[in-house]
Image (cartoon, rainbow, N blue to C red; front, side, top):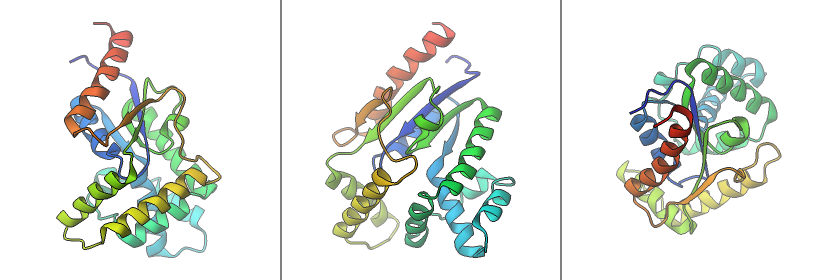
Length: 217
C-alpha cells in the first residue's frame, strides 16, 4: 500500500446510516487517523451536563485545548440524555465554531485523516474524497440501530428507535448552521441493501483511484 503523507476523506450522512463503522474500517485499512465529529459534540454535551457552567463557551474552549481523543473514545457517550443534548448544542454556532477550530488544528497536525460526521465535506471542502452515506428506507436503519442496542442489553422498542431517528434527521436537516445535506462532490452510497464488506469495497475503489492520481500507481 502507498505511503500516504497528506490525504483527507470526508464521510457524511444521517444517524444509523453505517457511516461510523465504515469510517473506522477505512481508517484502519489505509492506516489513517480518524476524527468523528459526533463524538466531539457528545463529549461537549457530557461536559456541559456535568459541569453546568454559567458560560458554555469558556468551558468548551478549555475542554478542547486539553482534549484526549483516546480517552473519550472509551467513555460511554451514547446515553439518551447525552444523545438528546448533543443534538441541541449542535444547533449553536458558538459551539460549532469551537469544535470546528479543534478539527482544523487536528487535521493540520495529523495530515492524513478520515473525517466522519454530518458536514465534514463543508468544513473540509478540499478533502480528496467525499462520501455521503445513507440507509434508506429509514425503517432499515432503525432495525439496525435497534439490534445494536439489543446487543448492549438496552431495551428500547423498535418504534421508539424509528421515532428518535426521524426526529434527529429532521433537526439535522433543518438547523440554521451546517445543516445535513449532500455535498455536490460527494459519492452517494445507500447501505440499506449492502453488508459492510460491500460498502468498504465501493468506497475503496473511489479512494484508490484518488490515491493513484495523487501518488501514482
